[in-house]
Length: 97
Image (cartoon, rainbow, N blue to C red; front, side, top):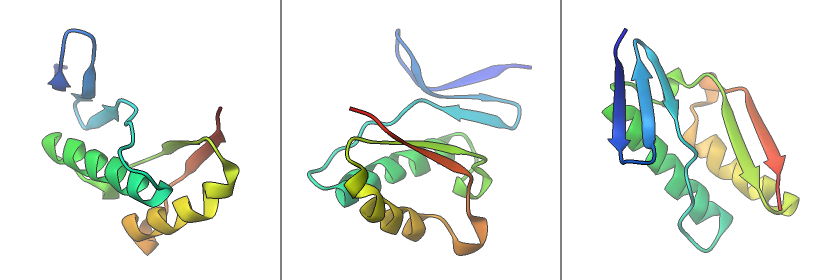
């Protein structure tokens, strides 16, 4: 099975595809608010998945990192606007500092 590297540089790739499996590198947020940061990250994910020939409907699991648990509700609002209501994804939201 061949591996396709997406947005590759000497250090890493933003995504790798092997067969029907796509793995994304962690995405870094742009923006001043949790809403704008989440929207930026989700747009990056959409673009990478498109380059890999797939879309967010096929996401199996997500890891999300927050620096402040008080941002959880704001994150959820953006997440719920991004993920179709009938396609809820398993996810892990971690608090990191």
